[in-house]
Length: 356
Image (tube, rainbow, N blue to C red; front, side, top):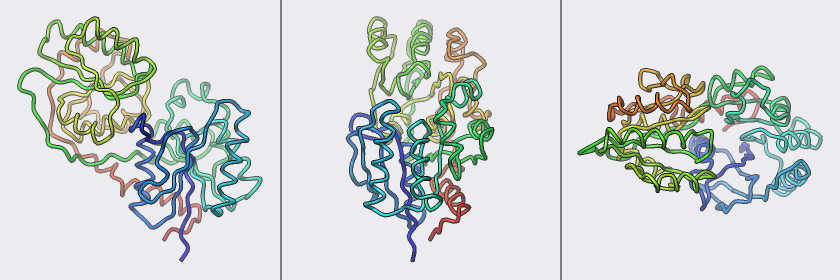
C-alpha cells in the first residue's frame, strides 16, 4: 500500500530556547500524524536546537543565514535530502519568502509536477497595506504553488488576489486544566512575543495607570523578545502589580491561563491569534484590538474588540477598568486537530495525492 510522503519546510519550530516557537505549525504536523497513516518529515530553515525525531517525525535543522545568496544552499540541502530519502508526494511550505520561491523553482526544474508544492501562510504582513508590503519572494512562492492555505479568511482573501487559496485554521486543543478563581482582584494576562507589533509597551503603560485606581489587580506577562530588556527596566521602575513569567511551554501557558481571569491582546495585526481561542476555551474574558484575522475567526459575542488602536492607551485603560473577571469556558470545536487535519487532507486529495 502506498504511504503518502510529505516533506514540511518551516522556519519556526519549538526548541530549547523557545518552546512555543512555531508550536502552531507543530500542531498541524501532529494533527496530520494523528489523523491518518502518512510519512512526514520536517526541515527547519533555521539553526535551532531541535529534536531529531518527534512523534515519529524526522526533524532536521539547517543553518539559515539571511540574504539571497543563501537560497541556493537551502534549496540544495532540500534536494540532497530528497535524493537520500526518496521523492516525497508533496513539499508543504509553512510561510513564504524569497528562499521558498527559489526552492519552488528548483523543485519544478528538477522534479516537475511529480512533487506537489503546497503553501500554508500565516504571516500578518499580507494584511498590513494590501499587497504593497508583501515581499516579492512571498508572492512568487504563492504563484508557484499547486495549492495554498491561509489560517484566516482575510489572509486567504489577500492571497487569492494572486491565486486561489483555502482557509485552514490553526489547531486549538481542549482545556485540560482546572480553573482557579481569584480571591481578591482581577488577574490579567498577556501572552506573546515581545516585539513592537504586539503593543506590549502600551499595555504596560496602560496597566500602570489602571493600577492606581485598582490596586488589587495584577498583570502577568508571558513571553520574551527584542523589547524585553527595555520593558523590564520600565516595569522595575514602576512594578504596579506587573510580573514577568518569561517563556513557557504550550502546556505551561494553558495552566497559567487557568490561573487568570482576563486575556489582553493589544496587537497591531493578527492573522488568527490562537491565544484568544485558548483563553476562551479556558474561561477567560478577552479584550482585544480590532484585528482582521481574529474578528473573523472568533464570535464577537465572546470577545471585546475595542475600537481604540494598540496606541490608544486611554481607551485601553477604560476597558481594563470595565473588564469582567472570567466567563464560562467556550469550546473551540471548529479548530480541533481532527477537523483541521481532515481539511488539509481534502486539499492533498484534490491534488491527487493518494491518502490511505
